[in-house]
Image (tube, rainbow, N blue to C red; front, side, top):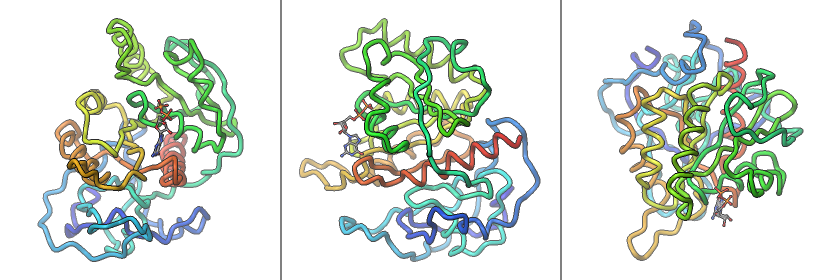
Length: 320
Ligand code: GDP
């Protein structure tokens, strides 16, 4: 019950965190609590829903983005993702804010280290879970609707312009594509779903084998579900998120294209509004709030933060 003793308050997702990518980030993470379980899936079931009383939001500094034209979105304390073995109950609001990854609801844990991507290699494309690499290294699967920006994000994470092109080659778009990072973990590119011109039967097939992968890949630490934040929530993304939630597949939501900030004249919403709406629509499918993070492959927003989050999930997974 990590959050049970804390007053409820709100945190800005644009709060400018003092964090940078040096090891000095973690000096304040000195309250590890009792280990809470060994399965990767427990990573996402450790922050119970809070029934805390509401108090006024705490004013926080906003980001330096010159395009921010409205008040920042605020996160209630019980909507934070607090990793296992992480205790924020003794922290005051400003030190909790300092521990939240910028543009996300993710609290950093003592496991957030070794974030650099020094090497990235395409390994193989598989059509069945059984054919995936068998070396036992932890992996993260990127999945999302076609055109969501998955290849761009993958390239941005590994800082290689064309790595993800491999997954776009004929014959590979419907495969589970493994990329080995630093020789000790994998990024996995899964087929995009909802491609308008794909025949219905083919779509069903993708569903079948990606679902099998989600349910049976023992080294899968977390799915990273990509959702386009520049448009209102789409039913197919909501269905995907709810399926993952109902099947207790660990999931992080990655909101893409967050650089598209301008409010469209025809009533289009800002990324923050679309993100909030998406969260509201899926919350019933999750026992606790899943981690989410805002990104842009144009500005590289969220890149370092995703790598820190992956590092903390991975290092925890390796230890348990
Ligand atoms: P995929 O089909 O999911 O692999 O998507 P791509 O990475 O190929 O991107 C689809 C389109 O969205 C391309 O035109 C990209 O240039 C564009 N795109 C991808 N990421 C971003 C982003 O973060 N911001 C903006 N503005 N456009 C993006």
